[in-house]
Length: 127
Image (tube, rainbow, N blue to C red; front, side):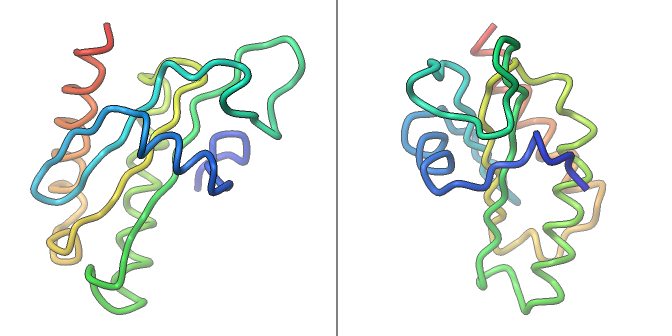
């Protein structure tokens, strides 16, 4: 489970990451990353006053991935994988991981490889 402060919940935050962030596509998922968010662009309801906001992540798993059991399994796997990689993300960044239909048949290791490749591509451009 992701800590509360690291979850994307608001529609505006998802939209900001998807529309104004960079994207890296892989066979199983697409990762959207927004690192250049200013203090006026996105408000974090969980951020304390003076410190940098934490990196936050959200997930999109549509019905094309599979039935409810399959979708929930994919979401749990992705949450676990992203939680392990939160320290790699710059403070204040927004990440949206969108599962593609092939993710329903993938195992944990395959999802991890695609997530690592996408994050590496996005963070390599950012640094």
